[in-house]
Image (cartoon, rainbow, N blue to C red; front, side, top):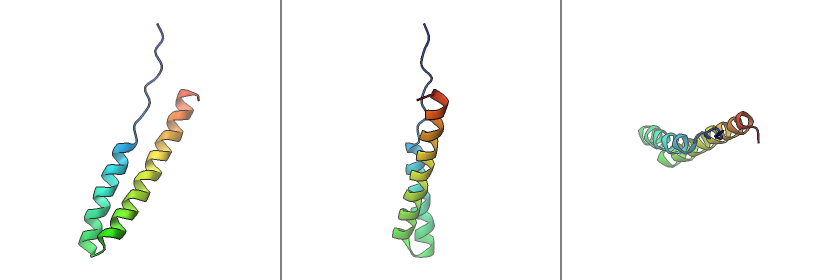
Length: 59
């Protein structure tokens, strides 16, 4: 029985990037900017993983 390949998860990158952004922003005195930059970076990574995974699976 053939099994379909597992899809990759990108949500962890969003959470990690937000945390790193919040810490970096707090250290520089701009925590909100850090959270927003981290969220944007994490979402970009998650979209990239999703697109790469779609090509790998063949959808």
